[in-house]
Length: 145
Image (cartoon, rainbow, N blue to C red; front, side):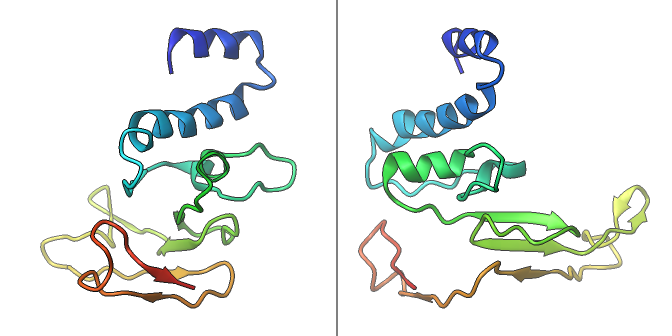
């Protein structure tokens, strides 16, 4: 964000959260998608920035703004340890509750242990088939739901 963005947020503290989320989406559009309209982009975010849907009473997050402004639905994943399922994204990657060994979560690779256990859950039913990259047009993965 630039100085003008920061100034606006200071003048409008009650609206600064949603403004920030929208500006994140606009920056992706301005800096990547306007220059390369066919680009496929991986956006690594934390917390709720990946929410495509607005939880009741909360502000619209970056992924929801991106969807609205671009007109193409993003595929959104969320990683978590424990807690309630996230129904505002497409896929939840759930990590096991950590136990610690030498200050590191035991499920991470260690010299004597290489097994990682976890799972994924989908907040709503989904049936997808993926087209082999050799059959899909270059740069445009095909997903049928």
